[in-house]
Length: 182
Image (cartoon, rainbow, N blue to C red; front, side, top):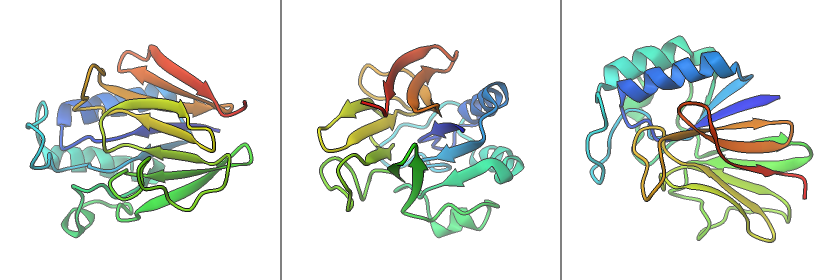
């Protein structure tokens, strides 16, 4: 199974179009969106080509390919215009017999863990900072932000395939990878 993870589009039509092009090139089985789809949020500058209506059109074209969790900038009014569910606080994936808890990061994160077993994976966005870290009892993974990276990070997305998470820049070049087998 091949999965593509994207976080924090924040209404950027430019980066949403790039995401769609990358998705077409990567051909994953599913696109998993980690929230903050349409609104830029009060703490962020406007992203490049801020156009939530344009983002809505692209995401609705892809609705059958998307799994999504709710970000702190997502609201019920956003659900009214999007044709796929966006209001779940988390979703769970089974990846090679490991439970992966996928969330945005504003409710559950490294500082406030969800109920987890040793060996589980916590995967979230929200911070706009890339992470592939072995925390001892669990793996912590964050693809960074496709539209508004923070720190020294570049715009990024992530692919999961054959037990390996790889964060990539928007040219598809690997930035860092981690195997869930160790």
